[in-house]
Length: 125
Image (cartoon, rainbow, N blue to C red; front, side, top):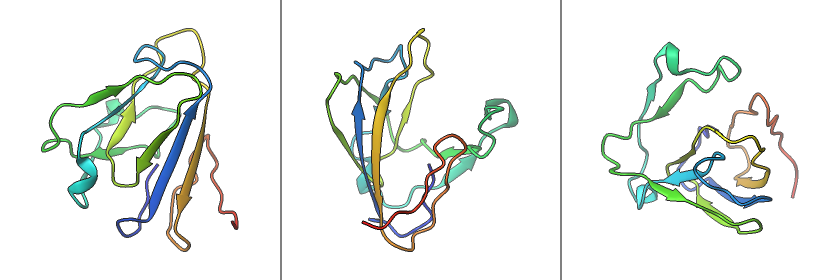
């Protein structure tokens, strides 16, 4: 999802309920990407925009990030993602869902996209 706030506004906790591999939509990251500061985004060409997720039409400019690192996680692991850590997930090529819980803290008054399927909303903590 996209945060349009100052650096240091976000931290996420990702907890899979099943073992996660590249085949079932596992995550990847770019080592040290949280140290680069604000990284520009680029528009995706229309053929790369998923018809169900039309608001996901940009991605991080990866030209200076190097190779990605696959993150294989076991059921119940916890991944803590720094808000500026560039990451993504592969297409799920398996016949099972990749169930997980994602808990994200966003500083107060920082705008964010609710998401088409996630339907995020602000709550008081």
